[in-house]
Each structure stands twice: as structure tokens, then as C-alpha cells.
Amino acid sequence: MQTTKKTPHIVIVGGGFAGIEVAKTLIRSKTDVKITLISKNKNFEYYPALYKLVIGTIPIEVSVPLNVIFKNKVEIIEATYSGLDQERQVIKLESGKEIFYDFLVLALGSETNYFNIKGLPDLSFSFKSVKEALRLKQHFCDLFGKSKNLSKEELVSMLHILIIGAGPSGVELAGDLRHYLTSLAKNFSIDPSLVTIDLIEASNRVLQTFPPKVSTVAEARLRKMGINIFVNRSLQSQEIEEVVLRDMQLNSHTVIWTAGTRINHAFTTIPSVEFDERKRVKVSPFLNLPNDDHIFIVGDGASTPYSGLAQTAIHNGKYIGKQISSMISGKKSVAYNPKQPSFVVPIGDYWAIFSSGNFLIRGFLPWLLRSAIDFRYLTSIVSFRHVIRVFQQGRKYRKLHGGCSVEKE
Image (tube, rainbow, N blue to C red; front, side, top):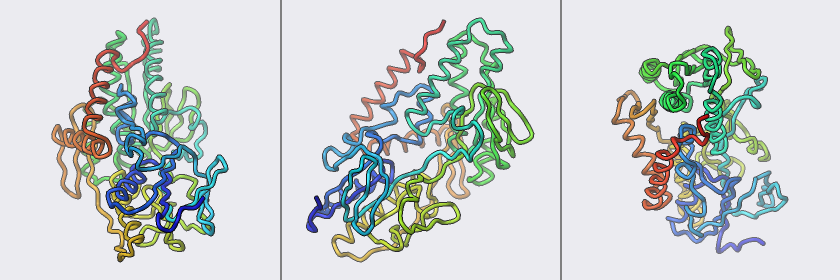
């Protein structure tokens, strides 16, 4: 059943940063609309902190139910988008259901890109979702749980960790893993020096998308923490316990893939869509499709400066919410104005790098800033009381269980 013209129906596909921000902005505008948000997951997963699940954070600290965020102001449908019919203005779900829209916002995000590397999808670990991060965490617990009575040589092989990809995710994980695995080793009466962490990067430096000065500072910090760094090394294939890199081979029971993403393949279902050289969807100055001003592309999938970042997705979402409200109200449209983001990259306990243009600071203050940014965002989508309650539960869990669910043998 189609909604009336009096109440335009806004359909948002994707429950990440961008999709949530579109809905929040429309709600704040008090424009008379019906909002439907379609997501494969019933929870919003706070991607910048998902790596913390690997080191003992519990899921409720990095994921929030969508119905808690919107409190009945948005219709939430847990389903998978499969395509659209622009002429009829309907989207299609995998279940076969069709939903009419007046305005459609595709905030489909990105997915892991394995670059067709042999063995990688089946044998590597990732942490782009709560499920994947918990799988990796349990893997570490299992490794240490099996450590009793192993020889030194066997332990060295078992506790050799490879992180492929030295972008922000890989660097942040490497820093936190050093502390976490050292703590686990002590808990299981294992010499922490037997734990090896290698960070592998195909380009010529870590944090390739950052200014070179940031890369230099980050590399110095990582090496000081005892993390081995290999640059100009691309992954060729992975067998069960062996990884083949360009010009070298390594044995490891744990390969973590953080090196590649691509926009969601569902963007290719849009009729007559065009992609830029980065394989992102070309959009107009108002972030809608050039041939359809009722369909907007937001977040990772949009061909805009700085796309692929959480800050940009939020900025996109806020703009599109205002743009839809203006179109409904008959107000003049204002073109999208990209905003250059700043970056905070934590590397280990109580230490981070802050980078904004050519300005850089390092140490405890940037780490504190990153914590404040995370806290501020979470309290912008749920109540302060909710965030504090969840934090207290997580702190209690880590104190009781050490972040590991297996028992020492």
C-alpha cells in the first residue's frame, strides 16, 4: 500500500553511521514524513571500536539495538535489500517483499575485498562485524587454552600472529593485541616473549593514506612495542598454516585480514548506475543519482571526497536528511560541501596519534580525545544513562573474566 503524498515515505537501506544520521536529521527537522529503515542487522555496530571485541570488550559496548536508538519514531525492518525498480519507485527484499518509496537513501556501506587471493576467505580472520570479532577473540582463547605441555618451538609457531594491512584498523589492532596477548600469556603461564606479531603492508609505509610524518610516528611506536613491520609485501596465498607473501613465506596459525574493502555489491543492482575510478557510485552535487533526484547514495558507496570514513558518512547523512526535508518543503537546495576529517589513531594503551592537516600530536591526550569522541557519538544516539550502564557492565565482565571465556587447563 502506497503512502499518500501528504506523508512522503522515506526508505533508508542500511543501519550504519550514514543511515542513522539521515533518519535522526529528518526526525529533528520535524518534517511530516514516514521513515522506514531496512537493515540486515537489528543492531547498529560501532565499527571504529569493533577491534576492541577481540581484546575483551563485550558486544553491548560496541553495538546498540536500532529500536533503542529510534524509540518507535522509525519503522525498522530486519531484511536484506536485493534491488529496486525506479519506474515504480519500489525496492525489493530477498524475501520477495516490495516497499514503495517517495525518497530512497542507499546507505549500503562496504564489504571485505579478498582480491581473489587463494585460501584467504576461508582461512583468515577479520573483525568488520561483531560476529567476526568474537570469532577472532575465541580463536585467541582457544590457542592459549591448548598451550599446556607444548614445546617452546611449538608455542613460537602457534603464537605467531600476522596482521595483513597496516591501515588504521590494522595498526589499532596490532597495538592493542600486544598488550592483550601479553596479558593472556601471563595468565596461562607462558613466556610473553614467545608471542610474535607481524604487521604486513603492501605499500611502502604504514597508514599509507595519512601524511608521511604520521606514518613515521606510528611505525616508531609499533616497533617500540615489539611489533614487526614488513612493507612492500603483498599477500599471494594462504594455506592452513603457511602464508605466501611476495618474496617471503611465513608460518602462522592466525592471519588477520584488514587490507581490503569495496563498496557493497548491491550498488550494482541500480539500473544505469555509473562508477568512478575508485568503483564508487557517481552522484550529483546533491548526492542523488544524476538521473533520479529521488534516490540518494550516502556513505562508503558515494563518489565524494573522503568517502569510506565514519566522519564522512555522518556528514553525508546529515546533509541528505536536510536535503530531503528541503525538497519536501519546497525550499531551495544547497549543494553538498565536503568536510575534511581529522583522525585519531590509538596504538596501545593510553597512547594515540591525532592528525589534522599538517598538525600532529601524540601520546595520552589524543588517546583521551579518541575516548571522548567515541563517548560523544554514542551519547548522541542513545541516552547518557544507557552508555554509562553498558560501560559498567563491560568493566565488571573484564574484571571477572579477563576477557577470555576459556578456562586455563
